[in-house]
Length: 439
Image 1 (cartoon, helix red, strand yellow):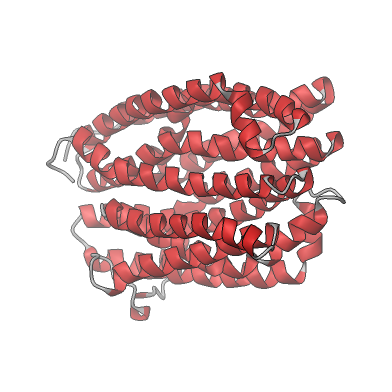
Image 2: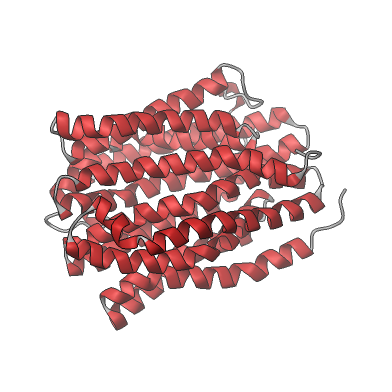
């Protein structure tokens, strides 16, 4: 981590995480594709509605995973594997407990939750069935995020990839089987996702049980210090804010879109899934960068932190720009794959093209946030994580929908992304400029 060429390290760790992110996005796309074959805008819209709930699970999963992982990479850089295991076990069991709590609360208030996420009356039956067959997997989903992050921050991205890919392939196989063969409809898609996430969790957990990791997850390693728990929460809070804002903004988007009918909600659902795939290309490289950044920062190799940051931005932008350009050119056909409805295609094409243009510069924002979080800059990391889906997006969406109607909704995310990048660039430059000489 502190001797090999930085570019080689980022690529070596970034390739498996990118593959994992892309495959995860693909099986989300597969979910949307097969549900779209039910020939119902309401069914397709239900996937988008429940996506906001999945974002909540991701928010808390990433909070514990990134909070523990960021500390782990710095501790391993400082050669303190015993303390690293304390953060690993505390983050893991904390996420399982939170997952159980979300499962219980979500089950008790399921109907209210579905409407809160932006469901229309016609989408409601599909969204309720989808949520019912997925919510039980909440602890496994959150646990998977933590295990995945710990492996990445240890520099074992290949092991993480194995667990995620296994679940993805199971999901792809179960979707058509449960949806069509067993005639379960959207309930089958949700059950397939829940089963696949549980399998991923089991495989990732096996990596730790079989002794392939530096960190140990024994219950005896759970910290009894409130300071350690707070450290995990505070360090992972930017991830909670980033993903949590994503959930809130997604629900708000559904609320604004449903004014224009189920077709508009379905279009936003399809575009969100496509953009997840495009965004994953750059995000995976960034996740490969995080352990390199945190480890070298902990070891006092600040010049390598600067080099890794610059290289990752260039590489991520190069990859994501090519994918986004293809998405812009073939936008109508991409939307039609998932829902071949003229209204959905028309609404989705404008939305997708606007976001394909803005996402080309988003790696600057993503790497800024990851750099600040990996080096323990909690306040700045939290602030930058709130920009894209919170500070900018929410007021822009409300204002633009009032001023420009549906078109305002279609371009709101793109405008928010551009403003976020403009804000993040000087913050990152100032942080790197102030880094001291190598220890």
